Each structure stands twice: as C-alpha cells, then as structure tokens.
Image 1 (cartoon, rainbow, N blue to C red):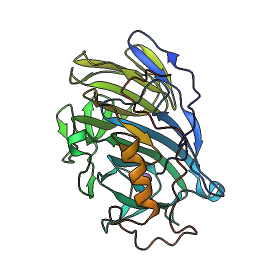
Image 2: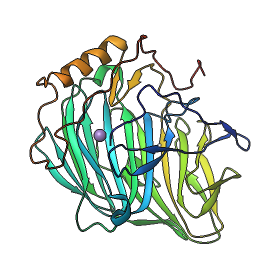
Image 3: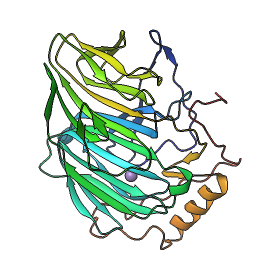
Image 4: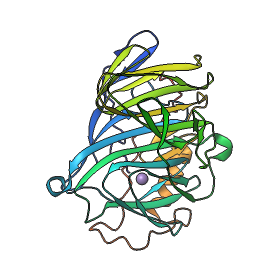
Length: 324
Ligand code: MN
C-alpha cells in the first residue's frame, strides 16, 4: 500500500467515546491512479499517531473489482516500518525487491520488513471478484529502524477462543494462541468472528493499549458502541476487555506496548527526522541500491515517483499529537 496523503492536513473530528474509549471514524482516501480504489483510514489520525507500534490502518472493501479496477499499486519504497497485509476476500499478488513473489490470501498473514529500504508492488489478481481487507504498518523502534529486508508468511489457524468466538491471531498472543511472526516491539493482531449475542471478556496484557476495528456487524468494546469502519481505542491498564456483539460481527483486535518514541512519517517513509526522510526520498528518486528493484511488475507505471517535500521541515510526531 502507498500513502497518497503526503503533506495533506488530516481533517477529522476526534469523537469522544465512552469512559476510557476513544472512537476514531475513518476518512476516505483514494489510493491514486485512473480507477482508484478508495480506502477507509483510521491511523494515523490528527490526534493519535500510534496504537502500540501500529501506525497506519487502511480498511477497504468489499470492493467490486469489475467496477473499481481493484488494487494496482506500482513499485514504491518503504523505510523504518513493517507492513501487514490481511485479507477477508480476494487475492493480491505481492512482489518485492528482496526477491519475494507471493500471493496474499484470506486467513494468511504477510509481514514485510522495510527497515533500511525495500520496494514492492501490490496487484489484485485477475481471479479476484471482491477485494476486502486491511493494510497495517508497524513503526520500528530507533535501534531497529535500519533492519534488513524481510518477508514472513504464515497461514493462520482459526481457533475457538470462547463460546461463539473464533479468532485468527496473526501477530502476538491471544488467549493462548501465538503467532510465530517476528516483530521488534510487543504487539497483538487478531481477526475475531463473533456470533450474535456474544459477550466475551478478552484476556489482555495490562501493559498493552488496544484498538478494535469493526469490519462488519456492530459491537461494544468496554461499553462503547462501534459500527463498521470505526476504531475504538483503549488505554493500557485492564487485564480484560469486554467485547459484546449484538449481531454476527467481524473485527480486528490490535494491541501493543505504547510506543514512546517520536518519528517523522511522510509518504511511505518513517525516519528519525526530516533529514532521514529527505535522504530516503532522494535515494528512491536516484534508484539507489538501498531500495533495490522489483522484478516482474507489468502495470502501466514502472514505479511511483515520490511527491515533492513540503517547503518547511517535517516535524516529528509522538503517540499523541501535541500540535493538532
Ligand atoms: Mn506499500
């Protein structure tokens, strides 16, 4: 996924939730291109950059590919982050400059590390009728910001965690189910399928903050009602979080230790400061080895050009935005 919002001011009301729950409503962002798919973005938000080290959340579909053209994101770079692709429906063909060519399929997690630099393309396959899923980014801590290119794949088993609750835990650990994927900070990512009239006290790490994204259906988290597309955020502290579904609901539960560092996020790059971002941008434009080349992409655009940097120095952001 590529970020077409570089330099844009984020316009979205922070919506006060119930006690201890902040509700972020998504904004619509076109991915770019002549028949651009539109995604619903909840992170980063004007007032909130991170939940744990989760720093970017795009939610899309179900998207009728015959009508929208689906996903066709030409080779583009990343630094200082990991990407997670998670599908509910459809397939995406992934190619990257680490030489990986992989299919992203529902129920299978793909975690790409683009620390010092990676490039990749993402295209929905011809067999895809509906495209439906999320893309998430994970900010890397300073000591691992230059991590080597990597790609981890795992078909995630669906397990029953409680009466009327099934889950696929693709990152971290939930109710005794553990993902083997490596991240650089403690994180949780799980898809939940909740039956009608289920109330589940989810055991969680008290040192984690959490967020619940509703994909379909509706649920309450810690008493706060959420509808499809909304992200409810809870601070760290409790050792259990109550999720109640009045109808069949699919949701993503995310969590992590609050990320205390400040970073600059601009376009598809994360760096310590403006100068690191400017260097990454120049390296991409000059085809530097740090990003490598993506082989086999056959779309109309050979690679996405970086947008122009703004005329002022980019400012770093922390977990809670102070300058909003
Ligand atoms: Mn990307």
